[in-house]
Length: 251
Image (cartoon, rainbow, N blue to C red; front, side):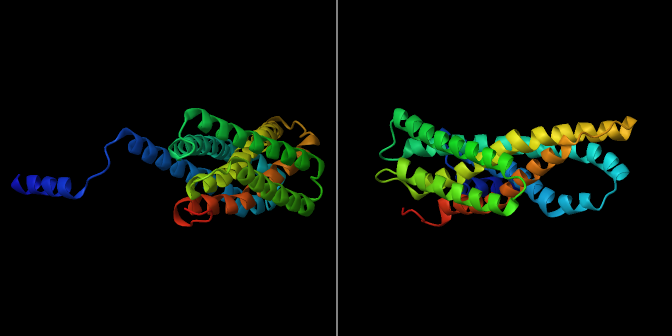
């Protein structure tokens, strides 16, 4: 008993976490953001680095068994992991904006985040159009998406950069913007297409119902959006890491 009390006193002396509510909220948001992000990006890499080539090796009857059994669960974790990741990240970023010297007023925080959200939504709308119209030319599509994201980052910096803005706020603005586009790809392109493909595949395996020709188009769009997300995850993760570990935009 004495040894336990001594150990507890030792921990009390050595472990002194901040007790203010703001710090607790921020660490919880970052923790949730990272946990959900690992789930989301981990499954994204599984789909693109493993599952795509694996599915090519399966015949029709085997796909009829594998896809309905594997994909609904995998895509559930995939899409909700994406949503939780982005929601936690956006809330955390808005808290950061509220602590910026020039951005302290709540109205300024809402204005900045509103402009940022509008720019990201415009970028996604353009990307959505490109995927639907250039689905047969993956290389050109990839180049145009890369240019689009660079332009979005430049406009974000030109639009919301203000005096004394921190590297953390600006890095997350760009990385988070890319992350929101990735989220919209998941919920706006990948999941709607995969949901229908899974249903058609299950019906075909169960009673021989013919899979509509439209499935090939939807599968192609979902593949391109997923592959775009894989490449976009590289700069997204860089800017997220740079927020705390690399002063890309100054202090």
